[in-house]
Amino acid sequence: MDFDLTEEQRALIDLVDQILADHCGHERLTGLEKEARGSGIGSVHDASVWRALADAGAVSALLPESADGGDLGVLGLVLLAEAAGKRTAYLPVVAAVALGALPLARFGGHADLLAAVAAGEQLVTAALEEPGEPTTLTTTARSSGDGYVIDGAKSMVPYGDLADSVLIPAELDGEPAVFVVPRSSMEVTPLLVTGRQPYADLELEAVSVPGTALLARGAEAVDWIRDLGTLALAAEASGICTEAVAITARYTSTRKQFGEPIASLQAVSQRAADAYISAEVLRLTMLHAAWLMDDAARGGETAPSAEISADIAIAKFHAGDAGSRVLHAAQHLHGGIGVDTDYPLHRYFVRGKQVEQTLGTATRQLLRIGAHLAE
Image 1 (cartoon, rainbow, N blue to C red):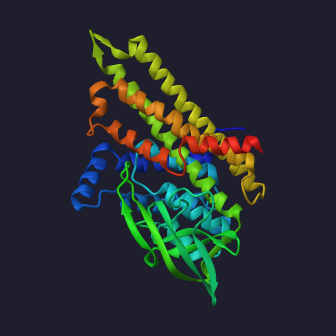
Image 2 (cartoon, rainbow, N blue to C red):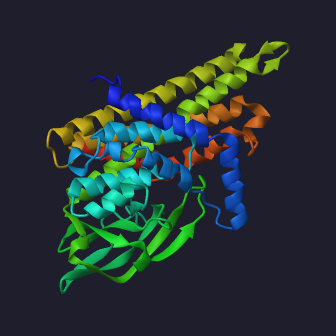
Image 3 (cartoon, one colour):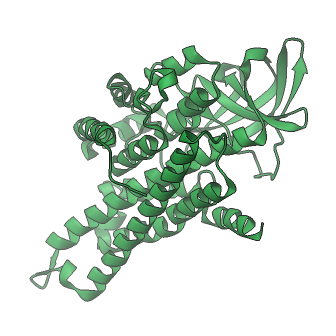
């Protein structure tokens, strides 16, 4: 297992880092947040930077060669999500790529929509959560003429109020299926969440879609989308935690008490070291799961094995558990400035909390891991 970046992966990250460094500094992000609050929307989406990334080929580079992509796959996805996390950029990497473009490319049949997503012209996301976190799908679909009729509700959908289309899992003829549904055909309730990214609740009441809206059938398809989204969130958390540790290291190295940097104090240095180790554990478990998922996909497997799904759950567990320890340590080691909402670290803290809550907290991941071990 080799985590060294290939030439193509390094080129992708160098390109993304340059674009984000130029456009996602603290002052600009603060301006976007103030603009969103002033408009009454609250949530932030950096459309211009997302379009710049798409124009530079950062999205298409992840798609398979069959979709005219660069075939960087899952490893490319997590590197992109990690880079966005380091900048706490307001970009739909998880929603539009992990939950949108890559599922469209994998299951096929929507080439025009996929091309528009890769070009940054449209957004597609997936609605994987339902109210009350039921153990089975409560959204249903039934055949009607040449198409289908869908009824149900979805909660906490990333970019659910901005996406042009949403991948909707529903029960069809006794098994899960995934449909591509236009957002305009659903009732959308925008949500204001901790991390300030766009989320929404969706309601589908007798929504009619054509037969071509059926993207995939089977529990494996839904599980694959969920695993990919969960892994991308763990990658974003890795970037958030890595940069939070770096910000803390810079601060404690320059903040002096009694004439000495506070980083020289044993209690400070030990806690910072623990935070660094936790961030590294998160990153390594995330890369391990990404490598396994990518290798399985290239080997022709149609869905991640139970072992790979468990490894993804382990990575997401660390995103919530270790990630929480890192962000609290970073905030505490900053002292009073750590609770200043105008200081960059605050954005990392609230974004990390949002990632922790999306697609399963640490406790839910432990339940997944425990169920796998029991089997």
